[in-house]
Length: 131
Image 1 (cartoon, rainbow, N blue to C red):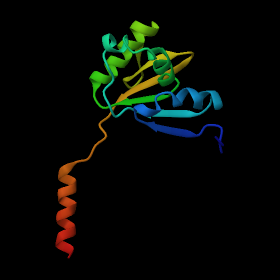
Image 2: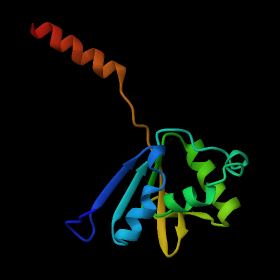
Image 3: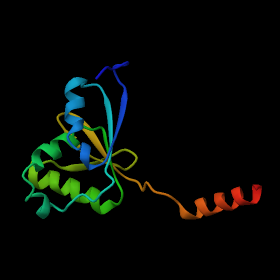
Image 4: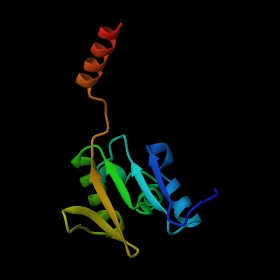
């Protein structure tokens, strides 16, 4: 991996790349890393059954920002961090939720990434009327 700047931004999407943040952080500890998880994050009870839970959780905690679709998934993540890694979540100024991990504040964000069907229909209607 060739880096152009010291503090580049890398945005990672989805579960097949859960271990990538660790590799990026090792290569460049100053990199800004964001991660969007497009699938549910499991509850702690389910997570405890997963044999690679420590590797996956620690890898995600190498990110600067982790994005979840709904608050329940973010809550499952920070509860897992508390129960499995003995980490606590906190709020920073502006109501930013996150977890302190090795001197860094990992922000947890809830944001819906999707398609607005009404916008598509509106645009399709506009396209049809142009013809």
